[in-house]
Image (cartoon, rainbow, N blue to C red; front, side, top):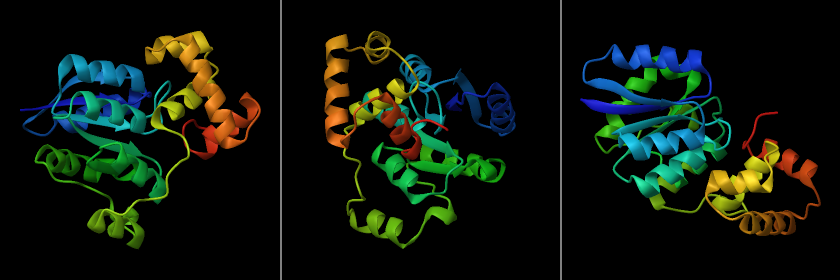
Length: 211
């Protein structure tokens, strides 16, 4: 029986996906989460075989949560659900350790196939994202264009853009308020920005939050 973690910030979407998953033999949803931080906590608590994560979630994106889950529960395979077929999101997903990437509009047709594939140690990518650049990177291991920020700095930017205080960010990420302030200063310096308004614009462009 495949044990599955399901994370999406919309309850009605989670309900529909749960019905879809559990209508197939050999699959059971052992935990649900409504944001990225809760998804990581659930993965640590339940040790699922597969984590299905929506890309766009509060506090921590699905890509950020995938990175945390894969580093702390490496045997858990990750499938990301996304509304975006932009290759940039796919690169980010692969770098975060995800093995599957399913477009939401095709979830009813592809999600079960993706879950079975990643549980078997294989990958599942939608045909629409498998352009020449993606194929070359997958086959040769070449680097995709990188963001100037570290993964932790991206975590901080997302939370700043969502209007959390430095103290709240520290509590969410389990770091000191001073460390958050240091990350904020580094981010502004790297991006050549001056204030939160510019960071919010960057977070929207980068897909860390939705406009």
